[in-house]
Length: 326
Ligand SMILES: *Cc1c(COP(=O)(O)O)cnc(C)c1O
Image (cartoon, rainbow, N blue to C red; front, top):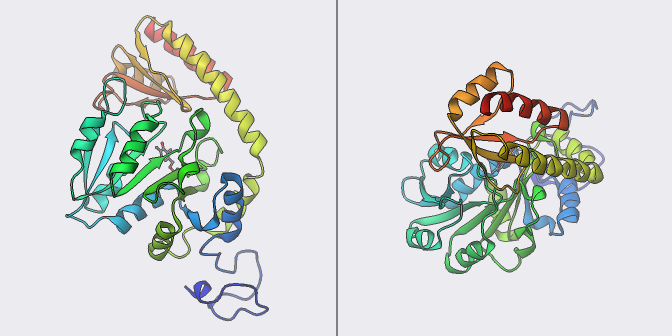
């Protein structure tokens, strides 16, 4: 792009066929989002060269397939059941994705995973805490894969702020094949902004920068993200409330007669197994309360995923569920 050939400050810009009359948006945005990355680098304690920003994590998932996988040749593995977008973008990019199923406690079966890796395997997707199950994956298993697999090991930490686990961002300098993803969509409360972050070695980031759309993060998003990242205390206090509510709701749900299991969770949602989940889901829709029906997902039979809302919303949720499940 034009803004790629000249970087820095000048007095007159006549290089990009922009309208010269200032309205706040007449100039193309910084293709590498340096100001925003400097702020993120500061918060995450990484170098600017170790960060890529995407139009949501989704864009980064897509870029990883395009950078590292040859369509119809290479393969990737995901620890399933997990976030649907790894498969969506595998399919869009015509790359085969294999499920390595978690066990019934949603933990990694190391022998299965190590046994599935072959010379075509280019990436392995770990989501920790995992969506939709809520639990964190065993860091020892991830470590073993980082040490024994030569391809890219991706750890999606979308829900890291709701967990006590240490972020893998702190280990980027130890593992050249580690790629960590986070997002502003969950704890930061900015799902509408569409801003995902990838952290990896400067070499991997440089590669992704070559294939990303030049102006993937628009000026308003860059400015708004910079403003919103100032509200660290507000984010932390909202996370605290959500965690208290999560514990309260999990406890209350366990008391309902037709609830069979409330799975342990390190995220801002809880997976619940119950009698006739689809029926319950539909009845809740009639009451104008929308949950996520996961009951057709393997290992999640008769499960509904419930996001933690405000205290008032959670009380209302519980009152309605108690009518159906007692
Ligand atoms: C919600 C979520 C994301 C966020 O995706 P964005 O595109 O950044 O909104 C990423 N990974 C997982 C596992 C999620 O559940």
